[in-house]
Amino acid sequence: MCCLAPGFFMALMAGSAEFFGGLLLIIGFLTRPTSFVLAITMIVAIFTVHINNGLFMSNNGYEFGLSLLAITVALLVQGGGKFSVDNQIQHALNTSK
Image (cartoon, rainbow, N blue to C red):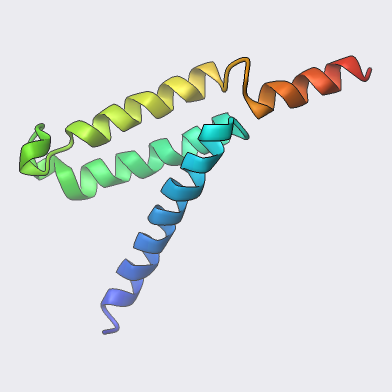
């Protein structure tokens, strides 16, 4: 039982990052920091779990993780977009000056 405790904690952290990070990305709030955290999560998942299984998802490979990594890196570079909460906050701060 003691050996599973760190694994359980890491699974809880990764699951929380993916769930709450996904919610933040949907509304476009804190897009760049959230994308960074999710990109790190995907890199860890690819190299610790999926890399030895090959590319394809049918063999539990890293194909899906790699596509999620590409998406999060694109959001990290580009940001949330014009309908995101981040943009609305920035627009409100710029007009109040």
